[in-house]
Amino acid sequence: MKFFIDTANLGDIREAYDLGVLDGVTTNPSLMAKEGISGDEKVKAHYKAICDIVDNNVSAEVISTDFDNMIKEGKELAKLDDKIVVKIPMIKDGVKALKYFSSEGIRTNCTLVFSAGQALLAAKAGASYVSPFIGRLDDISFDGMELIEQIVHIYGNYGYETEVLAASVRHSMHLLKCAEVGADVVTCPLKVITSLLNHPLTDSGLATFLADHAKAAGK
Ligand code: E4P
Image (cartoon, rainbow, N blue to C red; front, side, top):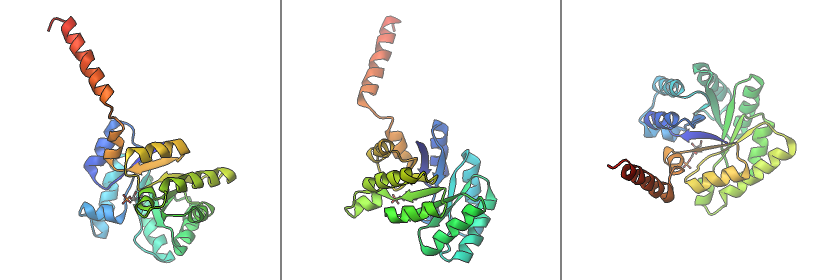
């Protein structure tokens, strides 16, 4: 399973990359705004800075919602770096844009997916990634994980190449369950990745090993 970090914060991206387990980055307009990044040139420069840190897979979201402007914007984003994946919302013109970019060999991530029907459309349109949002479904009392399972199952039935990118992953149990049901990718904040490190038996075991070593060495 690939690990993407869901942030536009360069420090967090660097930290996750330095851990050696990072396969990519997802951003969205809210995450860019959180970092105070706005205006065409600044946004592009920020995507470029992210691309300079990681090896591949940097999702950059279009702001336009009509086909012509999504294509224009997506092409400009894709031109920034080979690592860019153009992120397109699951709307009618978005589906058309997914088809267009797929025929042009430009990678896409279809975002804001909340149903299996939407995921099926994204796959048929040739999306490279589909992003179902687990946490936001959980927030409204729907089981987000059930949707991941359903999409993995449907894509498996037909051999779709679209990768299931589980998004809105809020905690380590989300991430682990995604691994169990076979999501191809999870995207989550840095703290979810680092929370996988934690186990009290690791901490107490290490403390004992170090204490025993010191005792034997006569310290
Ligand atoms: C996905 O690409 C989105 O950026 C993201 O995962 C949304 O997560 P949230 O629901 O925690 O904002």
